[in-house]
Length: 256
Image (cartoon, rainbow, N blue to C red):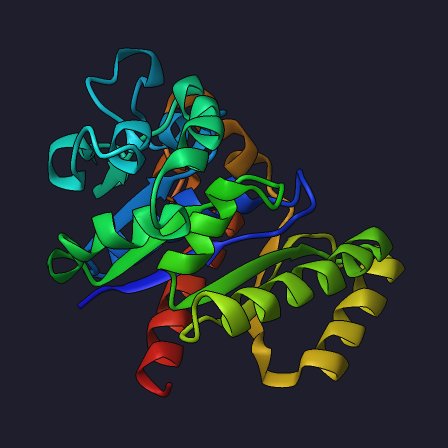
C-alpha cells in the first residue's frame, strides 16, 4: 500500500510545488511507483509534470465531488514517469460545493483508497492556505513533508502549520504526523540561511532531512518546458539534490 504524504506549508512561495513535482520524478528515477495529486486550483504541479491543464477530460475536482474516480481521472506524466491526478481552475469551486456534502473532509481519502495498492508513494501538493482542499489533503495523508526556506518569516509560519497538523491529528486523522522538514532554495553564502538552518536542526532534531535543496536556476527553468527539473537537467545540483532526497525519504520510511 502507498505511503501518502502531503507537501504543505501555509506560507506561499516556499517551493511546495517544485518539491512535489521533483520529488515525484526523483522517486520514479529510483524505481518507485508514484501518483502526484494536484490539490491547488492554480494547477502548477499539473503543468510542471507536462500536462496541459486546459485540456483535461476529468480532474481532482470531479473526483472530490463524486463525478469521477481516480482511475478515470489520472494521467501519465511522460516527462516525469509518474501518474498525475490533475487540477485546473475548476477546483476553486469545489470549496463551496463541498460544504453541503457528507464526510466532506475525507472525500480525497476515500477516493485514494481505491488506487493506493497500485503505488509506493502518493504525494499531495496542497494550496498555501488552510482551506477545505488542504484539509482533505491532511485527512488523506499518513504524514506531512514541510518545505522550508531558511528565512526568519518562514520560522514564524512554521509554528502555525505545526499547530494545524496537531489539530487535524487530534480531531480528524490520528495517523497524521510530521515526516520531516526539507530545507529548500538554500543559499550557503547567506549567513541568515546558515543560522536558520542551525536553529531548525536544534529545535526539530532528526525531523530535519539531511538533504538540502540549493537555489538552482535549472529547477526554476524546467516548468516552462513542461518538465520536472530532475528530468530537464539531471546533472544540475538541484536535480541531484531531489534524487538524493527521494533516496533519503525511502530509507526513512523503512525505519518508521
